[in-house]
Length: 150
Image (cartoon, rainbow, N blue to C red; front, side, top):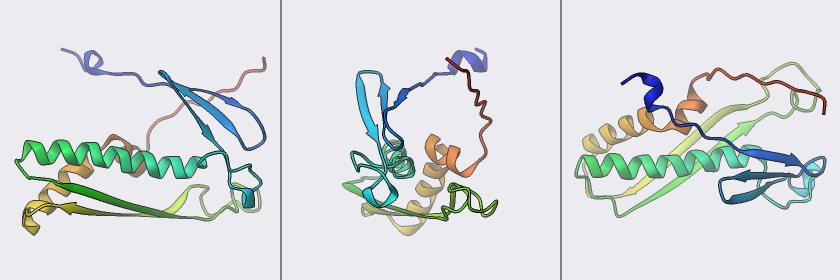
């Protein structure tokens, strides 16, 4: 089997409704991306970077459940806290530096388990290596962005 035989394609469609509000469609779902009032939005949904952190939390949960199951580690619960520091100056066109994205992201997992520290360390290492969203956040991903007039 070739590598392309294992590929799965994921996609979303989105419409910019206002200066800050975007409606995103994926499969049978629709969700709103917006900015909070203090950033000029109407606060009708999380903003893009909050969705990014939430996507990582969701992915970490799925992968942690899978890895623990594979290693016969009982997991009775998983709490995930993620926070990131973002300097908006580049996004706002006020400076060329620092980068537009997060300067740093911190992830804390609290696992309901009786596994020892060594086992938890091995599980965490595997979860980090296998989490697709974390991989996209921690490693550069080739992207092709185009624009067409309609």
